[in-house]
Every structure is written in C-alpha cells, then in structure tokens.
Length: 275
Image (cartoon, rainbow, N blue to C red; front, side, top):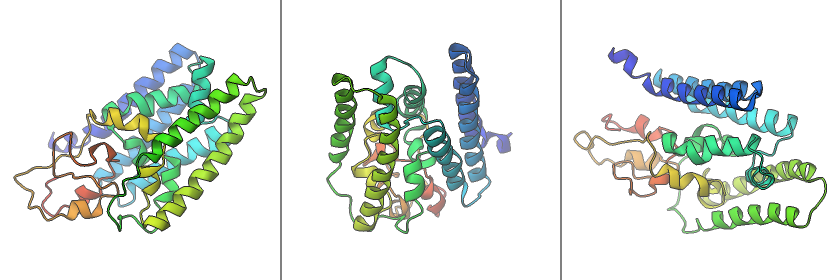
C-alpha cells in the first residue's frame, strides 16, 4: 500500500485532466477536447511518474511533450493563438473555445490545484529557456517584476484596439501575433537569461501570464513543504531554486511563494529528505 501511495499525485493529475476532457467533449460536442486534455493529462502524469521513478530528465520530457504540442500543433498547424492575445480575442468575441478554455483550465482555475506547475512542465517559452546554461540564478532577484503588468496591459490594449477599430481579418492578425509574439518572447527571454545569468528571468520579470497564475497559486493544493524536524538549514534547497522560493517556510506567505514552478530541484538536492 505504501508503494502505491507515492503514485497518488500522477493519478490525481490524470483524473483531473481526464475529467475536464470528458466534460468538455460532451458539453461542446467536440472530440478534439477529449484528445487535447487527455494527451496533456497523460503527458504530465507520465512525467510525474518518471520523476517518482527517479528519471533525471522527467520534467524536460513533459516540457517537450506538452510544449511542442501546443506550439507546433495548436499554434502553427491549427493556427490558434495560444498566447494571452488569443485569450483576449476569444473573450471579446464571447466564445468559450480554444484559448479561453486553455486559460481557464491551465492558468486561472488549475493553479488552485497545481500552482505554477504550468510554468515548470508545459510552457513552450520556458521549454527553450531551460536549455540555457543558467539553471541557478547568479544574482539576487531584481525588483522589476512590475514589467509583467505592463506586458499584460499592452496585450489587452492591443486586442481591444483591434475590436474598437473594427479591423477586418482579426483571425489572421491573431495568428501572426502568435508567431511574432513567440519570436519576441524567445528573443527577450534569451537576452535576459544571458544578461542576468538566469534562465528564468523572463518568467520573473516580463511574462504576462504570471498575472493570472500568481493569485490562484497562493491557494495551491500541491505545494513543496518542509519537515522542520529533518531540516538542518543547510541552504542547499535555496541555492538550486530557479525561482528564488524559500521552501523551508511552510507559510503561504513565504518569500516568492507564488513563484514556485514545482520543478522539484530543491527536493532532489535536500540531503535530509526534509522536502
């Protein structure tokens, strides 16, 4: 029984995504949603299973499975804007499809269960940035996180302006906004990574999606917790955290608590298995 208990989390994630898949399939009468969320759920669950089995690259496997699927298949082949502009587009048209469903599940409601897990396991921008050489931040965190709110506002203003100006061919514009937006995200992300010697600098300071993710992540069900009786305050967990989270503090108000991407680097590094 104890052996089976450790597989509770991958099972929970699979049940969550499969439930969403079946509900959307029946409510929208569209088989695509069954395939889409079943695939993502199985990919994430498989990654967690591989992590439990101590496979070194478990998280990277999930990043590639989910990230490439959303970027290449949904984005380029299906021509869906899965960036935040696509969310505003469908919201303004009053259609609960594609990006609005994606955001509701992965970035607005979902974080109540798995926090910023999206950033650690599914984001196609971070998928590339995590291959850069600066997995551990070399400098203290900068106080420029306010930039994310500017990019968030600009994305909203951009789409709102298209609707207010009654521009024709908005769907085509949305596709090219997705292409150009991704090029810009990768360019800025790589530049910031080398500038700050931090792969996740883009996530910390610029990414507009975090404006959705952070509030719900505060109440996340899945969190890294510390067994204070085992912890020897060695600081190794903090030294490997890409998001500068103080995981030794179990309070929801812990330093950078809503930034945790559940990468589990701290858990792997802890010499006393306190996390």
